[in-house]
Length: 153
Image (cartoon, rainbow, N blue to C red; front, side, top):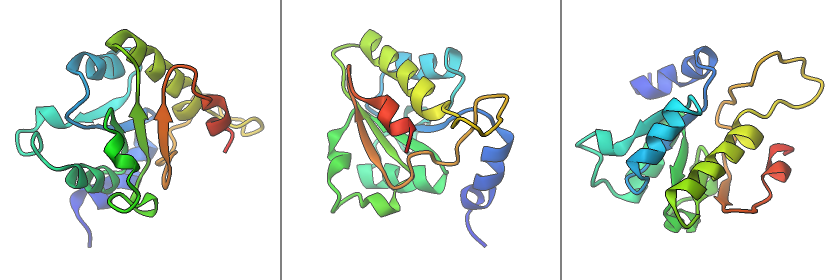
């Protein structure tokens, strides 16, 4: 028997047709509101949990995987594969843009090309809710980054 998060993880992704994201402490609160309200993502935001606000990056990395969520951050430290092995990650997206407006535009692209991507010929009538669509991968997303290529993988 695992933890509550590990036991409910696969059930959660079948029931919820929204991307499951783990937002670490460096994301602006306005961006989290944008993800929830405009994009309709299910966002676990660490700043809303007193016990996680000051947690180390390793704790966030582990919890995101345990909770079956893609880790979303502005912190490039997650690209250190020795500290954060890709084989142990549920997917990491590192955003890089000059301001919150540009970050919001990046999130729209991520939503369209990664989280809501349905391969041709699947017959899906609605956007698919992927079970950790970036599992084992880390992605740097910046204005002009090639997200369409990622969606095809």
